[in-house]
Length: 137
Image 1 (cartoon, rainbow, N blue to C red):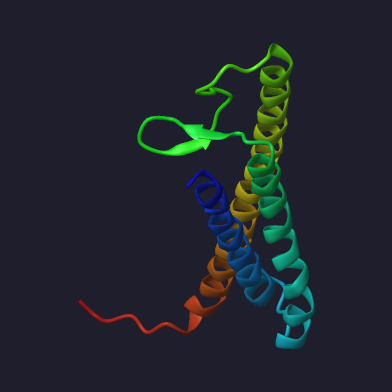
Image 2: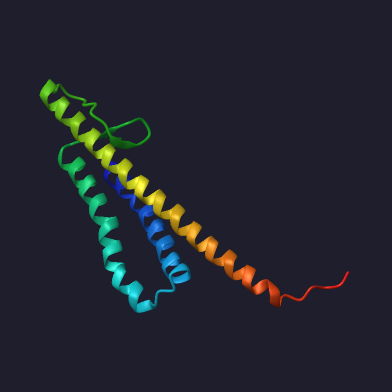
């Protein structure tokens, strides 16, 4: 459950990719051919880190019961040595830092892309306002 829960973090990455696509088409006026060249890189940038983080956590037995869900935890049902517990804590911290960096990049991409699209559409509307008919009354 924890593995698939962590893979769910792919969704915000694809949201950011979609926002970037909109910015490429609307703001930078990229063609289909140009956006198709970028698409494989976006898939790789989204899928690779998330699968690697989930696989590292799974292979190091870092998923455990956290009440309602299973997710990253160093709590172990059995007796474990301090060295193993410390190793798990280190992996969890590294995964958390990488996940935080990915989240920051995703959020920055979304905000920047949507701001770029908004400013472009706002500018187009301003230019088109001279052609608008006003109704009397």
